[in-house]
Image 1 (cartoon, rainbow, N blue to C red):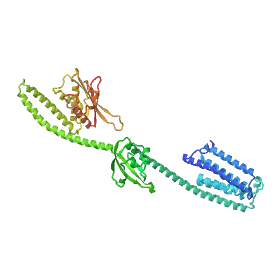
Image 2 (cartoon, rainbow, N blue to C red):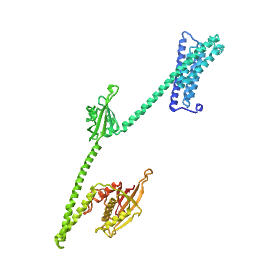
Image 3 (cartoon, rainbow, N blue to C red):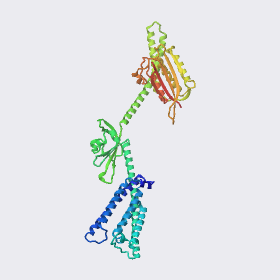
Image 4 (tube, helix red, strand yellow):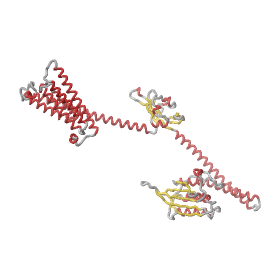
Length: 558
C-alpha cells in the first residue's frame, strides 16, 4: 500500500473514521460544487455571453476528468490507512484544479476566483488551523503564478483569444495583494470556526459518553438492586418495573408495564404519598398466593408537569415474617425449656427421697417376699429417671466451653477407665487406642470427656450382642488447604463393629429424646452434638465396613 507506507503512525480508530467521513464529504462537495457552477455559467452564457469561457468541449473534458478523478479517489480511500496525508493530497489537487479553472476562464478577470475559498475552508475543517493556513499560502502562490503567466503574455499560448488585462505590474500587485489577504482572512476565520466546532464536538462527545455511562450505571443499579422499584406516570400507569419487582411479584415487566397500578396491585395506594413512613400490605403474586410487602411512595418531579409520576419501592417481607415467627417460637421454647429445667431440678429431691425410702424398706424385707421384687423395680426405674433428669439438665443449660491445652490420649484413657468401673460394662469387649501420646487438644477437657463417655457407651451398647465386639479410637491432626488462612483440626474417630444404625433413622439420631433402646434417654447424642458445635467443631456418622459405625468429631485448634 503506497499511502500506508507514507503514514507509519495512525491516529485513534474514532479519529480516523471521522477524517474518512470528512474526505468523503470533500469528494461529494467537489463534484457537486464545480458541476453546479460550471453548469449554471454555461446556461447563462448561452443567451447573452458576458464572461470568458473556453469552448464547451474543453469544459466537458474538465468535468469528465473531475468525475473520473473523484471516482478513483473514492476507490483509493477504501484501501488506505493514513487519511491525514490523503486529505492533504486531495485538497492540494483541489487547489490545482481551481487554478486550472480560473486560468481557463479569464485569469485575473475570472468569476471563479472565489472558488479558491473551497480548498481553504476544507483544509480548515479537515486539518484545522495548520491546514487552512497551508492551503491559503498554496492558493496565494498558485494565484500569483497565474498572474505572472498572464502578465507576461504567455496565457494566449494555451488559451486562444485570452482576455488579458494586466497591462502593468502595479495592477498585478493590486490583484495579488487583495486576493492573498482575502485568502488568509478566510483561512483565519474558517480555522477559528473549525477549532470552535472541534471543541464543541469534543464536549458533546464527552457529554454523550458521560450520559451513556450514567445511563448504564442507572440501568445496572435499577436491575441489580434487591429492592423492587416501580415507577408510574401521572395517570397511574406503570412505566418501569425492575428485576427485583419481578421476583417479588412473580410478574414479568412486559406483563405489568402499561397497566394501571391500582388494578395490578390494589394494595399500593398513592393516598399515603406524603407519609414518609414505610407501610406494609399484602399483594397477590402471579401464582395466586398473597405475600406481605413493605413499600413507600414518593413523587417524581419533572420539569413538565405532565411527566410527573411516582416511584414505589417494595421489599418482600415473607422471610422476615418467617424469621419473626421463628424467633417467637424460639423464645417460647426457651421459656418452656427454662420451666422444664426448673421442674426437672425440683423432681430430683423427691426422687432422691423416694429412692432412699425404698432402700430402707428393701433392707427390712425378707428375701422371699413379693415386695422385694417390687422394691427392685422401683429402684431401677428411679435410677433411670434420675439419669434422664441429669442428662436433661446437662442438655438444657448453656454450653460455654473453657478451653485449654490437654493431652487427648490421657483424657481418653481416663474416660475408658471410668466406663470399665460400670457394672454393666462387658469385659470381653476389645478397646484399642490409636492416639499419639504427644497429641494436644485445645478444648474444654470436662466437656470432651462427656463426649467420649457418650460415644464410647453407644458403641459398647451396639457391640453388646457381638461375640467379638471391638471399639477403636483414632486421632490425628489435619490442616486445611487454604494458603491464605490455613486452619488446623483434630480429627477423632470412634469406630465399632456393632449392628450399625439403619439408614432410615440416621437423620434423627441427634434429635433430643430419640432413642432405639428401652433404657435409653435419647439425650446422649444430642448433648454430644451440642458440645461439639459449641467448640466450633463438626460431628458426622458413616458406615464401617463390613458392619458397624464410625463417629467422626472434628475440633479446631487454636
